[in-house]
Image (cartoon, rainbow, N blue to C red; front, side):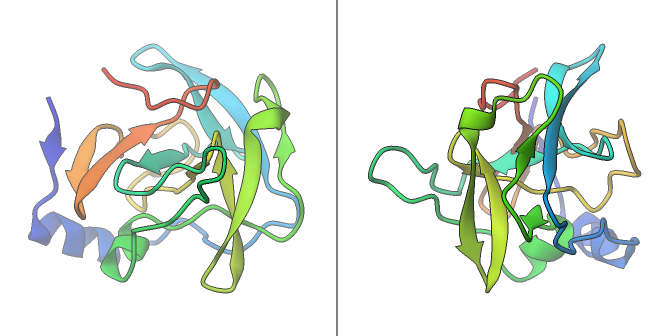
Length: 150
């Protein structure tokens, strides 16, 4: 069942300490595993990464495009890098990529722009899974680069 974030919850998310959205020198993408969702992508510190179904997945001649903006980016901070992203444990280096987003370099995986969820509280937190908000749905990403559904 998809959960819907109401305006009050979205506003509350804005008031929480945000996940660092600063650019990492060489962002690391690796794989973690949970009993509930199986294997999913994380950054180098174990923080869950998400895809947004309202974004355009980059495939073939189609460039990935970000549709999250404004308050959406406050609730779902982008996963930025300053160098080429690196594949860690069980991540597929051939699926890593980048796009320009607001003058920064955003990491993509299998063509999907990657985000954090501001309400996740550190490594292992996956509270952003299967949420409907800002005109699309948010999902953890599998090592194959697909959305993880419950």
